[in-house]
Image (tube, rainbow, N blue to C red; front, top):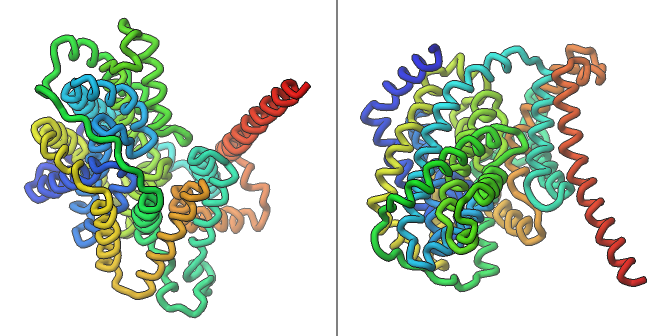
Length: 504
């Protein structure tokens, strides 16, 4: 009941006229940018992060939440019509959705994706509202050792999950941790890695790094490997779903929601895992197996619902523990920090009105998005006709102007270009960029908690595993780190043995 009353208070905040306007602008911008080909939610949020800088914290974060949900919605349009997923979580939507579009059923595919996203977002946001306070109560019982172990778990899971190689993920993480050391040491007051540049005394701006790695790096990578698109499949007929479409979709929406939310809440989960599991479940439970691979509507409804439910699920560890488990969540954490706010249990105590207003605004954003998406599908489709050179040229211009507008400095511009080129190089050689942002954001927090724990224990490193919670968390981290390596080694061993057997 307490959560319900807090949510009602949050709704009263979220229904204020200016807050509604911020939410509407956020969902419109998020959908408009997210619908563009090759641009996923992480890039959308990074690109629009500077837009929210000049607003008050409540309006900015609510607009930010609208951008986040709008970017998630927009990705399904390109997957269905262009067979161009903006991120890995949209790959499954493209499998069946693009087949439906080729068969002239692009309208129902877009409709089931939009309505499924609405249903999943609504249920998942309610689950977030009722689950978050329970997680906060547990988090308030944790000390420096447990928090450091949580940070290590976040480091390992993000590094092991992103990319094809755990070693490359860890390398990206350590780049972020090295960048986090730049600036004034909070304990001793000494300047670290500033090389006499006064602008580096305050450290590396998370906004600059995020925009450079995601927006500039992606634009350079696309420019270097620009391929002509396959062509867009026009939406023929009405976008309305038939009675049969509704009967086949509603169960898939619910299954996708309850698959996606818990997986999104896990440290090693994510929308891509949830969407693939949902697709596998729908393929197993369907009464029309012959349609899978040829445009089954359940194959769009379930994964798209799971995708959006997982997106809401990632807000559970982000808001309650301050742990980003996805690239988009890492950039959202940067959005909080630009206003001096640190997500975690104290955020619910010190800024309760802001947090509950944010959660309530997610409900409103979902309603706005389904109202925007269905009638304005024609408008979003017209955006897909923008030539890619113009599109990515605009991204470069917008990212540069946004960053310089926040912090007008030649040094900041130089870092934006430097990190953008670094982002391109990382993509070129297969290094994931998300762990760099996570390392920069969580590095100082992990260092602070480690120092506190060691100070309390008078330098005894054994204190890090002296409580059951910290020991279990570090043990889970070791499992997440070692199991992918062992699996890859086992796969290589089986391949080598097969090659040796062929040679014999």
